[in-house]
Amino acid sequence: MPLTSFLPSPSPKRDPAAAIRNIIPAVSNANLRENIYTIPNILTASRLVAAPFIGYCILHDYHAAALSLFAYAGITDALDGWIARRWNLKTVVGTVIDPMADKTLMTVLTVALAMKGALPLWLAVIILGRDVGLAISAIYYRWISLPPPKTFARYWDFSLPSAEVHPTQISKYNTALQLGLMGLTTLAPVIPAVDMSMPLGILQYVVATTTIWSGASYVYSKDAVRILTPQEVEEKKAEAKRAEDKKTDAR
Image (cartoon, rainbow, N blue to C red; front, top):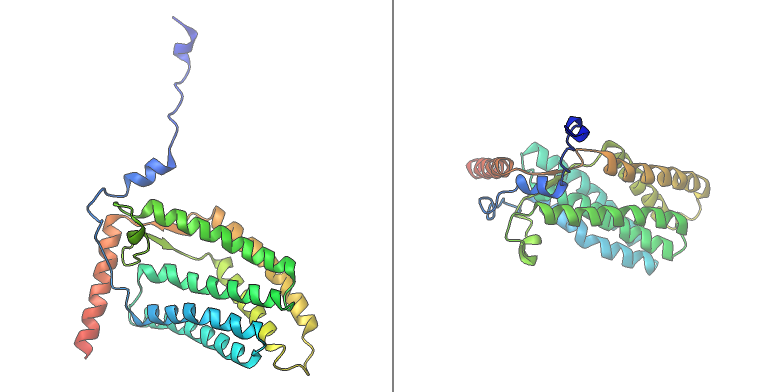
């Protein structure tokens, strides 16, 4: 008897892509949709629209206007989450476009402030590098989790839920610190009599640390991105339907 017969047979290689495909039905949830036209999502979309105007105001030295729009973005960021929790208006698309709005605002602020010399170039590279990596990951997860047929139109149809994004705890702290840094940097030209160079310098190094840390947390966290099963998609739709019925009854 050959000696190889006593050796354990090698375990088959696991294919992550195949494992993901196994939990995505071929056709059954291809047309499952949720209501995306909720107040929280509209507020989030308004932040997306406001972002380029903030960048324009910074680049053209309209500091007061930039600060006002930045304050609006911060208020709506807090308000949309509160409304979604208070009236059970959470949607899968909300878990995607909310961080997207934050990242769009952060990208615009980072580029505009760096171009004006108000933000160090090395810090801008760290912030933008992390966000580019997360954006590529989001595109990948959206594509592999989208039920067939996979088309360009369906890819951008966010009423077709496929995956949920859950920010890590350090990422939440990092977002708050980044927004604080951008807010102070935007505020500084409005009150030139106050010297903010020291607090801004300290905060810049803190933000650099948390930005790198939060980027690594998405790589090693198992719960940051989760592919939805067909049953979970149905539950999301049912929750949205109950919320809509409750609003209708209240009227």
